[in-house]
Amino acid sequence: MTDKERRRGGREVGEERVNWKRELAVDAAIVAGAFLLVWLVDTFLLINAKIPSGSMENTIPSGARVVGTRLSYREEAPQRYDVVIFHYPDNETELFVKRVIGLPGETVTIVDGRVYIDDSAEPLRDDFIAEPMDGTFGPYVVPEGCYFVLGDNRNHSLDSRYWANKFVAEDKIIGKAAFVWFPFSAAGRID
Image (tube, rainbow, N blue to C red; front, side, top):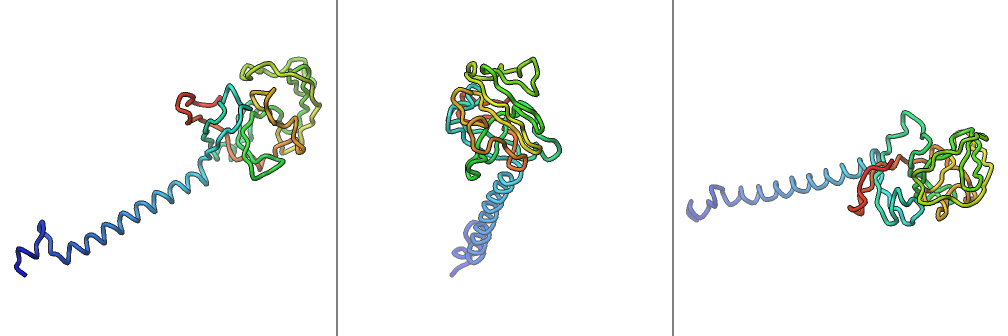
């Protein structure tokens, strides 16, 4: 074999085989690193949840995908009106997304569709709900370390009013819903 035959593009034939294997190893390491990064972000920073029903309309449409932040409640507790992602108290294999209404130690009463906290004369604001709520429910005394949650489409929501286990324990809240990313027509921040 002549020098010309051994050289291809300035490389020796044996060197070309070694470079090909090295490039494959580098590519595999990049792909593995990308998967590891996605796993770390999904496990420790963000949560992706699907909204299967219309229980959070008009805030979040049915079938939407939302991103939540897992670190939201490391330093502070959930606040009233936060939209949270949590393990459903009656079946912890399911994730639910609802709005925090009752805080630990409070008494929640719903009279003629209006929500009252601790027998207040003024109902909570409800400018985010899909339609006026029907019915009278409660009173519900929220245990320490737990929350009372409602869907924004209250007449069509399976929420704290109807569960066997009425309250969401703080350690079952995975994160705060932050952003609708799908469908793109509904994409935006969740308030």
